[in-house]
Length: 161
Image 1 (cartoon, one colour):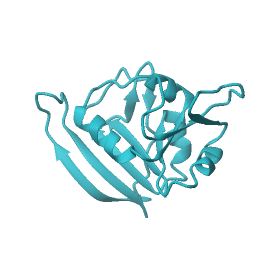
Image 2: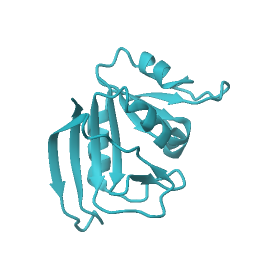
Image 3: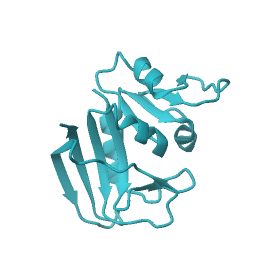
């Protein structure tokens, strides 16, 4: 079982300058809860935006740079090798970035998305278009903007049909 996890704006925006455009504390808390104890697969730029391996997870970094090494991380040169490196985890998570998400869509069994109900025109990284003929919504939680969340958002889970 391979899960893509992402926070995606209405216009599929993911971020700008290798960072998130928005801050949703509930999303970050949920992300931590669901990924703890799992393998997390990401591209080099996504890893570098985090700055370090996330605690209590096995970090797998995909890069074309054959000399790239990070202590306490697994470094591979393809998504296929990343999935193979996570074979002992019943549910590894793909964290991005945009190109990794695009490639992972063909392999993923689950999409675990935080849908941010706002468009961000100045984004420079986008989630790929989803063919909803291939995915079924199985769970949804909707939330309004509030004093700690500038935008309304939804936690939505899709399973591949």
